[in-house]
Image 1 (cartoon, rainbow, N blue to C red):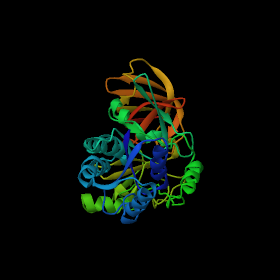
Image 2 (image 1 turned 180 degrees about the horizontal axis):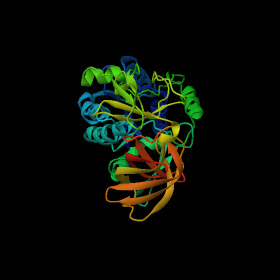
Image 3 (image 1 turned 90 degrees about the vertical axis):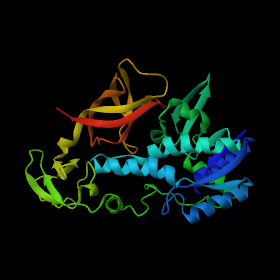
Image 4 (image 1 turned 120 degrees about the vertical axis):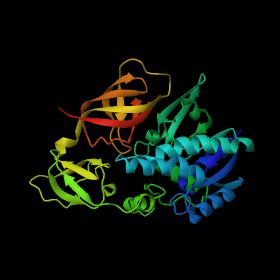
Length: 348
């Protein structure tokens, strides 16, 4: 089978290519150029991927993905921040660029599947594809991999999902791959310097200072531009108060930042929209696990489905549930589906 591997120049995707070769597949490497200044497709990263491909003896190509990345990831990211929500661009990138655009782009080249270096597992049996967590709980990336259409996973594979990070590095070193000890980055790829506020100013115009208010609407300070703050943030508010204050929400239309005590950020419920269930429509109440951020622990919940959305009640109140973020649902190590957080409802 001929398989395209999305090679970022890092150790995970490089090892994924090597593992597929060992399994007897015909492998072709592709690096996607998505952004001029990016942590995942810089000139150094492209050259690293090229050197790995040469070491493995596989063909290697660089694909220009600027336009699709701008349209499907950066523009929605910017619009979400402008509306006061907190987006997750990595979910869009996987869904729309890797699982859809890349799959279609390499099909004419005879590539039947696309593989990435994500730490997750796919089980294919009886015509059904099950998405499961990676075996390394510290590196599991299944949260980011719920597709927009369940069938999109049928042509995707995750070769390193059954290994730990240490095992991946060990395999890369044993194979003499030149990236075996390369450091990894957790930053958003098109924000290599981490300057979110500066990026949004360049896209949307200069930030406007505005009022910081308490939950009753009383002005307690001034923000330097509401894009620079995130829900749940405590440091850097420049407010003196008798108790610690946190960002409760960003009100983009009014250019206000609402702050309050920690208790104001506890939510007992949330509403999730644009739900995708990987194995049919959920019509009955469901008890399962949910992650409300990629780094958040999985918590128990009850999901009450509705048309295209669901009401989710947590087993215990959760801190900092941010509209715009992604929610992924689990049963054991299997991913059931996911959707976008529309609203958090405070604990009562």
